[in-house]
Length: 120
Length: 106
Image 1 (cartoon, helix red, strand yellow):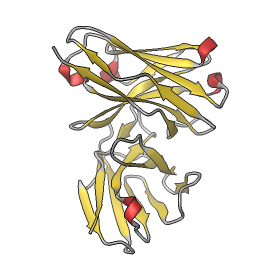
Image 2 (cartoon, rainbow over the protein chains, first blue to last red; image 1 turned 90 degrees about the vertical axis):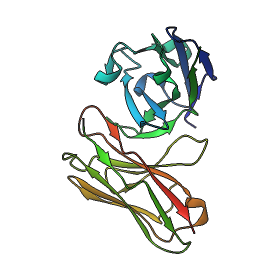
Image 3 (spheres, chains in turn orange, yellow; image 1 turned 60 degrees about the horizontal axis):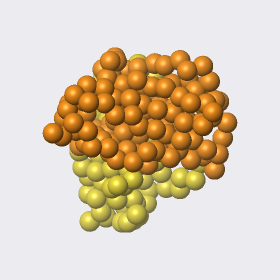
Image 4 (cartoon, each protein chain N blue to C red; image 1 turned 60 degrees about the vertical axis):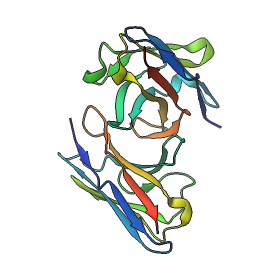
């Protein structure tokens, strides 16, 4: 079965960076984009962008350009998201997600979420 | 960006029918999707492309609408349906989500 297993919670200081991982299993990793979504209590759910796991090509929501960097390691079927120049506004739960078969952007499979807390 | 507006909360009794609305600030064709999220869990896809039931989702859930106005209906509501429901559009870039409707049972 399709599974997306994310890395554990992070506590980071303002101005630093964190890198979250999302390890996929149960399907051919390079056949499906991985998308990333941010969830906060105040802003709800926000779409960050996606990575083409086959080519490494990326597409970002303008709001997250310069904040998030998406990469993949095909050898381990793992997608990564690095968040840089962290501020308290980056404190959130971050999810990776995968679509249904076909070219679409609705998300049938989600990781369990990674809590990032930015605090001095 | 396409803003999706949902009512913040609803309260219904088990066995009743409930409709949760989502209004888009611009047309999204039929590319509206619905998710259920329970506390401490990731969202779960319920409906995709306005009216298609996701695999494993009970037939008590249904979706309708096109353009800018969409509805998720649960009939009948069960105690386990207590959750927050989000709509999401994928017609316009960037993809956006509604603020969520918290469904409580009386």
